Image 1 (cartoon, one colour):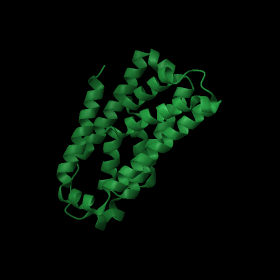
Image 2: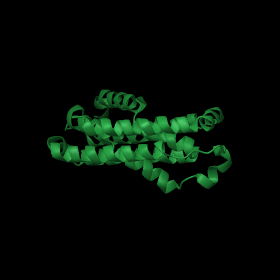
Image 3: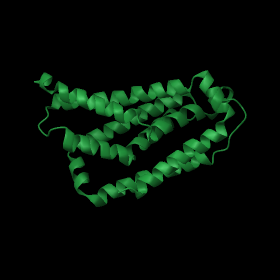
Length: 209
């Protein structure tokens, strides 16, 4: 029976991967965490993003997705909370003070805890209205209601693991010595760019219909 749904599984893998590689709040957050703190923090942020995906999947499987999709008020509430969170994080990055000391020399002193890294990734994903909209459409329109539990379990695990692995790779890439050297040199500019992008995303989400 599972093999009858292989085309659906492959389609979801493709759609999810395409959604992952498009730069968004999660992408900018992993880069920011990796460059400002460390590769370890970036990796744990990626794990937090994966856990955030799990929350989206759980409420979709529980049928709450259908309720949200039918309630404009509820979805707008989620959208505004997410927009405020993104703007707040972006503002913090935008106004952050920079240092001429190389990150590698002060990493242990400045790095945040594992819990904080996971929490940041988790909240970034859970409160991202674009992620909510993606999973709403995926589970209410794309995935048939009579899809077997085994198939749902496979695609759910795939989306969680693919999210973690992809953003771990992003973190590893952006913490290469050459990349960090460039960041150290232009840290103030990068803070303005990443912070500005996150604030812009927050504003765009807040005013979008």
